[in-house]
Image (cartoon, rainbow, N blue to C red; front, side):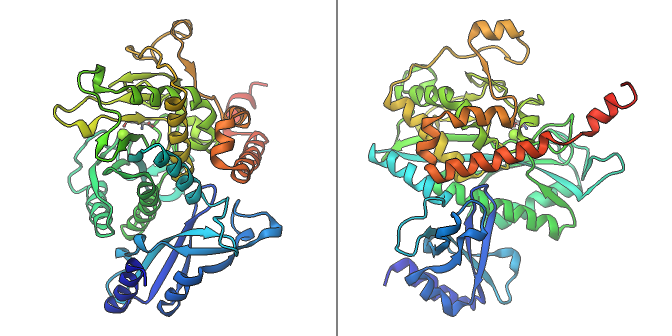
Amino acid sequence: MDKQRDFVLRTIEERGVKFVRLWFTDVIGTLKSVALAPAEVEGAFAEGLGFDGSAIEGLTRGYESDLLANPDPATFQILPWRGETDPTARMFCDLTTPDGQPAVSDPRHVLKRTLAKAADRGFTFYTHPEIEFYLLRSSQLGPDGQPVPVDSAGYFDNVPGGTAHDFRRRSVRMLEDIGISVEYSHHEGGPGQNEIDLRYADALATADNIMTFRTVIKEVAIEQGVYATFMPKPMSGEPGSGMHTHMSLFEGDTNAFYEEGAKYQLSKTGRHFIAGLLKHANEITAVTNQFVNSYKRLWGGDEAPSFVCWGHNNRSALIRVPMYKPNKTQSTRVEYRALDSAANPYLSYALMLAAGLKGIEEEYELPAEAEDNVWTLTESERRALGYAPLPASLDHALEYMEESELVAETLGEQVFSYVLRNKRKEWADYRSQVTPFELANNLEML
Ligand code: GLU
Ligand code: MG
């Protein structure tokens, strides 16, 4: 018997685990869960667990609805928030059709397929996300129709006795208990806004970790009587919640982005990777920023990127090459700042990797770096420097995506057309709304 499976079965027995949740993710990035009795786990390893895929967003077309969830024993963890008595564990699943083929609509498979392409070229893809979110008093809106944050603190503020401080301590503890290493945590710029940065891991583990992270944060919030949201821009006039992601490619133990003596210690491979991201940025935005609300963040200022350019330590650029740490060749990396906290991490990472790999493969030339604060330049200065805007809305992003061979090929036909359909509907629903903004500005005046 497979060693990892054996370990899982033994742990279930030894720890007296009463429920094992099988987790997977739909195309939009919502976590799905089905609880198994411990006695069923061995069978689920051997044959998978059958379910009706057509009941889940984007997973199948009606006529091929049977899918199997196959638990990945490497992801077995006991869920700390369920307590010590009658413990509950979870495993992420790979989805297959009844004849054993990977389900083309499984986001985890889309990422695995793209990672395999990178592996064919000898690369392992590592990522590290900075996840921002808001803590609110509840999901109810205040009398002014806005969410009510738990505090009015700002960036790096230490709030003695405050909710956020205890909240982060408890969350970090729980994340560590479930095997997710945290690098930093701090209060972010907005009232009630927090950030937790996960440590580097391979992209598949990171994507799984992000799904777990969102669940942990929501659970800790419930426990503490508050509410956590990953909505990209919950409050007008306050910063949005981004999920800036640091990326690097390794060849074995060697960082392929590092070159001694090169500018910013950034190798040719690293430069081509950035060039690929820049060139395809607009095409992947409907996935990295998948909600109508995502564009309120991208165009709402407060350090969210709006223009396609790169820079060294330039927080106004879409892509940043962070300061090199002397003697740390491993740390040369590229930070993509468009992604928001509500993205599907599997699909987003697949596309970011595919864009970067394309840049390497085609040896795209890296344009000159942005040295200025691109938000303070005039429109014509930006045009002269070649800093094109990111899509202005979901609708605009879908237009780019629809024309993109790279996105179609990376997502596969089924996920590609599902995302387009689902997101066009979101846009159409949004467009048909008469908003408070229009009423406030137009009703009395017109
Ligand atoms: N909240 C900002 C964003 O939406 C980022 C702030 C920061 O630089 O960490 O991207
Ligand atoms: Mg931040």
